Length: 95
Image 1 (cartoon, rainbow, N blue to C red):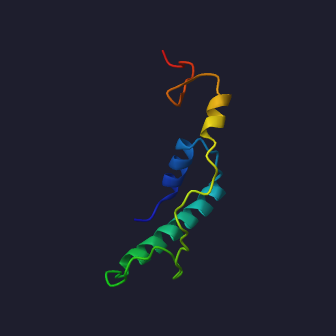
Image 2 (cartoon, one colour; image 1 turned 120 degrees about the horizontal axis):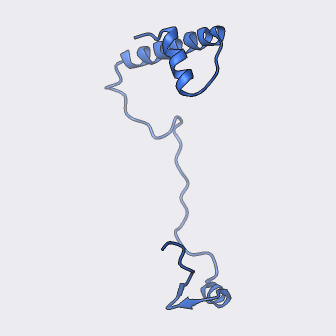
Image 3 (cartoon, rainbow, N blue to C red; image 1 turned 60 degrees about the vertical axis):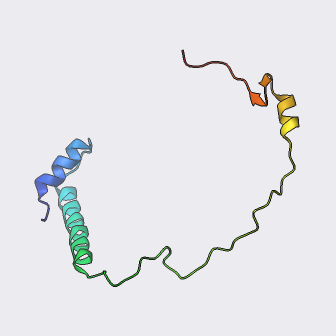
């Protein structure tokens, strides 16, 4: 279902975009081109094609899951203004 000029002008009006008649015609041609491309892509039979996670056949390098940082929990707790049971206390902001 191709768009018509009134569709482009209506969308521009809803988006509060001022668009000239020539710009509307250019936009109409571009949008109809995009919709035609989508129709062509939807017409293809892709039922035999396996889904891909990436456009290239690459594998993610994995690393060993281990802690590499020094535990500074006690240092950060000592710098806080109010701490209770290992939790930071902050002022109430919602009544």
